[in-house]
Image (tube, rainbow, N blue to C red; front, side, top):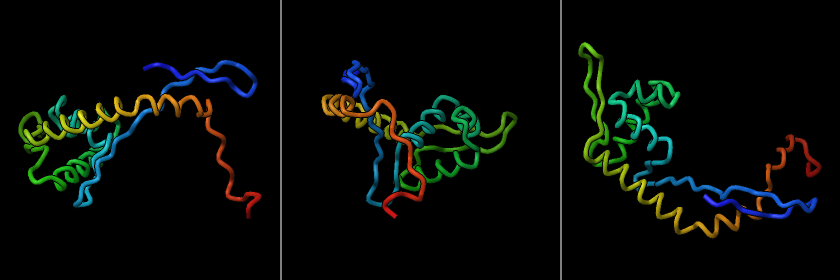
Length: 142
């Protein structure tokens, strides 16, 4: 991704990266599908296990399971199916709906990134290199 160039307050040429997008899909039923749940679906697709996917994302199994239940609950058909027990423990897999959700999300993300490239570049040129520190609760406005 190209870098943004700007002149600092001190007169130096400074290079910044383009701001990135983070897409969240909010369904009419209240369900929210964003980068973390998409990452979980991708990890389940790769690892064939909710616990292995959770470990790879460094989240708890309980959190991963709650996210899977949330994803399945917002869709007409489940995105992830699980199988309990067995010698190797349980297994998980994406359903065709789960694979389609990933495909659609990545398409939306890709199109949004392309469509907003010049605007994100422009924002990158006016952004600070580092954000200002957050003020304490006591401020001069109190």
